[in-house]
Image (cartoon, rainbow, N blue to C red; front, top):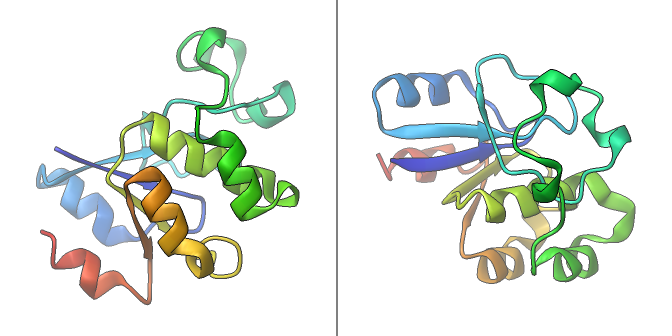
Length: 139
């Protein structure tokens, strides 16, 4: 099954339908807002206590040993910029969770740099609106 990671703005209703059909598995780590339709948690990146405010101690996925950046984390910081920490965490979680796609509406910090990010992480970055037809063609 193809893993598709959505950041907070990347979700579309059509994704839920693709998941119900068994074509994709939606994944997200809740660094920001909660999308109730995405129940599969991604593997966390370099999350701090402040990044985990959407979870309670009993609902934190995995163990604290998993809460560290991957070997791509520093490169993502250089590409995205340290001031965009949540974007970096999401992208590193995409990599750590072995997702094939990352859906977002963030044109400024992510989509504008998609070629270099895609090459670094071996993923496809999809703008949820502008690239929807392209994404849909995979299924």
